[in-house]
Amino acid sequence: MPIGAGVVSAVVGFTSSFTVVLAGLRAVGASPAQAASGLLAVCLLQAVGMIVLSLRHRIPVVLAWSTPGAALLATTGMVAGGWPAAVGAFVVVGVLVVITGLWSGLADLIGRIPMPVAQAMLAGVLLPLCLAPVTALAHDPAVIAPILLSWLVLLRYSPRWAVPGAFGVAAVVIVVEVIRAGSHVDAASLVPQPVWTTPHWTFQAVTGLAIPLYIVTMAAQNVPGVAIMTSFGYRVPWRASMSVTGVGTVLGAGFGGHVINLAAISAALAAGPQADPDRERRWVAAVAGGVSYLVLGVASAAMATLVVLAPAGVVQAVAGVALLATLGSAIAAAVGSDGGSVHHRTAAVATFVVAASGTAFVGIGSAFWALVVGIVVFIVLRPRDAGTAEH
Image 1 (cartoon, rainbow, N blue to C red):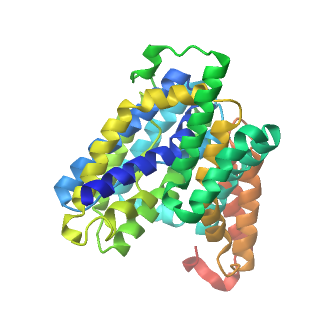
Image 2 (image 1 turned 30 degrees about the horizontal axis):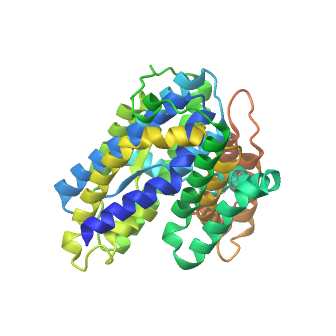
């Protein structure tokens, strides 16, 4: 039972969001081969991290790539210095994650960023990607409608498999299009090949990409990941987890990997009672998930090739529906289920608008400026009697 749960968590995690990863890497300048290498890198490194942490601590420590982080890449686009500068930004994120685990001061600093602002930035980043299925449907309804319909039906009857099912239909659409068009598929492109890129650092890439990517990863992945594990009665080894994921991110950056972090949604599949009634044996599910990611890494090149051959709008439609749940959670956290206080809500909306605009200023992307604007508005509108205790 735990082995099956681990395999399912890996398959669902991979098929639900690998299109977002490839789209994000391509957006910041990666070639198809470099994007495929990045997908391979995060698959293998998170697999090794899961196996090591779960065996060492005998709890189901599930790792994942940062799907919200990949969405951030997709909306940020090319940074000054191109792809090498994006790789340099990935290295910076990895170093910051390691520091977070070793020095509580940085974790406290991130914790002082108002949650409505951080979540509103994420929501603004995700919005353009979540609009893509709508525009794709209007452009080519005959191709996109079956994908969205399959997603909706599965969401009703088997939510876990909704996005993988949508991708399955998309894969059929792509294969039919390839056969119809008589496109040639190079067999070499189906074999995973690591591609090295020497990192380069620019001010714009560090401020406009690395810092927002680090904050999104912490706020949308690592913190919820700890919360989910806690809800199942597990205490995450914080320092070890941040060290492993941070070092893994640094090692994978040169091969195109963006960020490795604690899993959130897929962690529940391995850490919950459905994995094994005996909570002391659920670590087996995480190890099985790690082994599964090693196998999926071998398939990463074929998946990347499939994406390259996709008709216009198909990949965007799958990526958009994959991010809808995350967008909904981010919006709810930004404004609060009860509407939030006025200054919380205003700061969140201001952050959301700036992030969703996609506008760069002095070469720095909108995600960074959304954080700046949101924090400034939050501080300016904060009631005087709130004091320094409110964040």
